[in-house]
Amino acid sequence: MSAVAFDYTAPTTLDGALGALDVPGRTVALLAGGQSLVPLLTSRQVRPDVVVDLNGVAGLAGIGIGADRVRIGAMTRLREVERHRGLAAALPVLASAAAAVAYPHIRVRSTLGGSLCHAAPAAELPAVALALGAEVVLRSARGVRSVPAARFATGAGTTVRAPDEVVTEIVFPRTGPFTYEFSELCTRGSTGYPVAGVCLGLRADGGLVRAARVVVAGCGPVPVRLPGVEAALVGRAVAGPHPGLVASVVAEATEPGSTGPEDREYRAEVAGVLLVRALAARAGREGR
Image (cartoon, rainbow, N blue to C red):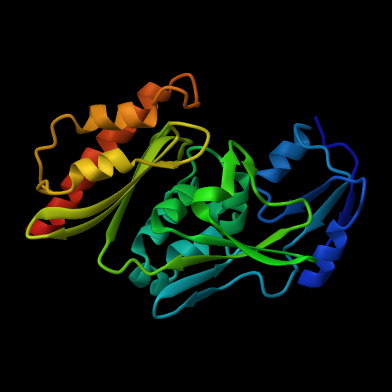
């Protein structure tokens, strides 16, 4: 099968890209890394009238590390996120999550903005962006707005991005007293499609959890924070034991009325086990 016919344009400026989106009555698809869009085009799940290629647009890629926040251009390749030494020092969990995405040849093309906009339920970067409290910056001819990562994805494959908007950058606060762990289980070892993932943020002192952030991915249409699990961790020893923790994750991630895959209870149980392992890994480092 091949894609339906469409017009193609490759602007070199952001204003040019925004102008290309202003086509009343025609559907437009934005091409970033193409790792998600191209398969959707060839399978005809997406049938745009126009494809706007962002790869030649100046100013949409790059990593800027400041004293209190990190700014990453939406067109920054995941391979750069993975390998950037300054980022590995400032936000190591972001670099490690990028390294967990698929295969190296996929990461060479895939972009951070593309990953967030594709909004796959079990994807690594949307979960980490949520845990870190990132902001997604969007621009249109109407102006600029910033959306918290917690509100950016609205469902599997859907976001709040309007048809005339382009994601320009993602802004991450520096983690301060929190340190983060990211872990996932994939269908084919470390490079398969994620079954479930967990991002754990801890502020610990004297071996005890003083504050926690827990985000699970793959258990529903979007990654979610588990405030009940976070509260239950406070005051516990990082090293455990953690009786009932997996059951708590399952209960909160699959609460009545929530939606997700048919096997979401299994996925939530996997996420709970990953959380226990993340706590053990953190305790092991502190014990060295």
